[in-house]
Every structure is written in C-alpha cells, then in structure tokens.
Image (tube, helix red, strand yellow):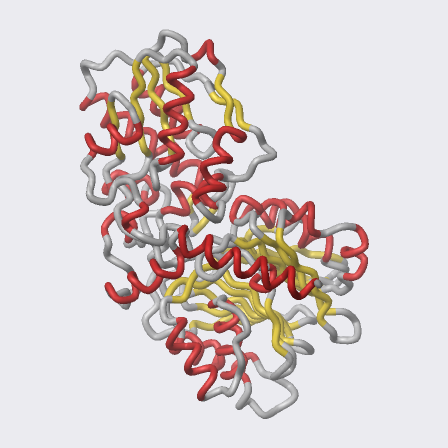
Length: 503
C-alpha cells in the first residue's frame, strides 16, 4: 500500500511533490523518494529509508530541479526494507525511464525470467516494481523513433498490461517526452487525475488519493479508469486511451476500511461517508444481537475508526468518548514491517484516559482485526485502566485469507481469524464480547456512495481473488517470502550488506 504522485508543471515541482507525499505518508512509512527531470533532461533522484520529513533536507530539495517529477512513499510487502528497494526506480534505456508503483504483481517470478531471457535486462532487487519498469521499457524498445506519439505510449502500456498480473497503479517518466499513468484492469489500487490553470497553461497531477491534489492547489478531475493510460507531454498536452481488452472496476474494499484518509475521494466515493455508513450498519447489528448487554460508553481505537464509532454510538444512543490518546509521532502500527516493531509500537502509540474506562462496560471500536496482537494489547490497556467489561466491534469482517495485492497480510497462519470462530477470537484478544461487520453490509456501505461499483476485491474475507490467477502454490510462495520470520532474516542480511558496502 504505497503512495504515489506525479506532476507535469511549468514551474519547479520539488516542493509540491514533497507536500503531496506528506499527505500520503499514511500509505507508507518505510521509505520515500522523489525524482525530477532538470533542464538538461537528466533525472535528479533522492530516496532513502524513513519519513518524508526526515529524508528531504534543504540540500536535497535544492538538487531536485525541474518542472516535472514523481514521488513515492513505500510500504514494503515483498522484498525487504533495504534502501535499494526504495522507489522511484529508473533505467537508462530506452530514452531514460523512471517509475513509481503502488500494488503488487502476482506473476513477478515469471516476469523476471521474461525480462532476463527475452529482454536481456538485469533485475538488481527483489522488488516487483523494478520488474514492472523493465517490462515497460522492453515494450518501448522496439519503437524505433525519436519522437514518440501518444499511440506509441499506449501500445507499450497495452503490451505491458498483457504481461503483468495483479494490482498496480503506476506513474512513469520518459525523458524528453512526457509522463504516463496507468492502472490495472480491475482498478484494485487507486489513482486520480487533477489539474490547475497557471499563467495560461494547464498543469496536471496524478496521485493515489484526492487529498494530495488539494494540498498543492490542483482540482480533482476524475479517477484514472481501470486499464486506462493517461499520457501528458512535458509541454502539457493530455491524451488518454483504454489499454486493456477486459477492464472492469473492482477496487480493494480495504482502502475504504483502513488505508485511505477520510477526507479523500476514491472511485467517486467519499471515504468519510463510507465509514459513517459502516458505523450505521454495525450499530444496527450490535443493537440487534446485544440487546441484553449493558454498554456504558463507546470508545474508538484512534483514528481510522473514529467516524465509525461515533455513528455506532448514535445508533445505540450511548455516550461517545475518546478513551485513548494517540502519540502522533509514532506511525501506523499495522503497516510497520515485522511483528516485533508492531507490538513494541502499540504502547508508545496509545495511552489511556483512565476516567473513561474506570468501572465502566466499554465498547471498543476498531476498523479491523488482522493479527490480533494489537487488539489484545489495547484490551489489556483498557482493563488496566479499570474497565469492568470490554466489548469489541470490528468494522470489517473476519480476515481469514492473505492479501496478494499490496497489503501486508502474507500468510493465513498469521491472521487471528484463521481456524478460529468468533468466540475463539474473542477469547484470544481477551474481550467479553466480539462482533464483526457483515461483508454484505461493508459492501453496501461503499456502494451507497457509488452504486456504479458492482464488484470489489474482498479476497481477505472470502479467499476469492479478483484477478483469477492466484493459486495455492503462489500463496505458499509469498508466505515463504513475506512472513515475519522471513522478513527478519532478510532484513539482517540486507543490513549486513549495507554496512559492508559502507565500509
């Protein structure tokens, strides 16, 4: 779940990209990067591990010259947290290409072989984004002319779409020509287009979420359609084309539950409004199933669930209180790489307001329960603060299956709902009662804002993967690469390699 941004302007873009990335920081806290194209048609690149505010100092911003550029914040799934896998990636041929990518390819091993054998290109990292960049470069290579036409770009994207599978929202820079943005044929990962008028010129911007447009003064135009490519030349001409034969919208529903900011619009859906609807449906379910339970107060686990909990409190006619104080300088625990970091961060991230718990029957509301260890710690904190009984409501259904489209849910065995019923999950996290949102109600919450979305990727709940190419063999393969034990081993090797290189 990375965040990406790209701008074609008539003035320097370094500060605008930086500002946009800070608004997308919630989508990735592991690394960040910015690439620009200067007046001499050279890439200017800065990327490193850490938060946007830590990586880009004044000296770096001064070097990022140019009126065109892209940015990326990384949330690692496959591969490692090594700085070598931070984006943007670039290759020198043809023309000079750089790319940022949000999502995950499900046929990366097959593609790596294709890149090596057919394209004679070397892949230097474990990132599927580097593979994707080289596949795009491979399909641009046969276009033997200096002046690329939009049709040439769209043909290359069309051929790339035929090769790659999975989830991808991408932005690419082609030196001397323009910027192209494209989205997978199911639109699993979000990508929006914005524009602004400046001194008689129209400038364009792409971003993962609409909120990134707002902060730099771009007007939201529309979402990039599933399977669509939009090409903007460096002098500001825009072209678009459908580059897939069977494109149909089926976005990841977890974007609305957890990842996206509430003030964003994705696929013509207000994330805030969708979460309010989730609270309405879940509140009605609680009122029906827990008629005999005495709940004194409704408390959200900040911050994604605040709007959901407020609506639940309204439906139940119970007081809504903020019982946890969040340390804003600790990142989102769910997207931290490795279970050890996630667990240690919970206590640093949240502190209780004891008066809101003491001698009360408390309903805690969270957006979801994934591994269960974070929920368990939060429940322990509530008990230590004096709660008599603790009930727990999840705005998402039980997560029983791994995600293969860019969310860090690598193995079923690491999910608390795997092999457990609701009562067993409640016992594991230590609550007196537990309720999950119904999947049909979750879907309805989003469709209520945009009835034109007929389908969603709900694979983490159902095990039905929207791309239709995910096999048990593939799930075992990604489990071996992406479970916490494998990540810990890989991180140690990557750290040792970097230390050796520095010496």
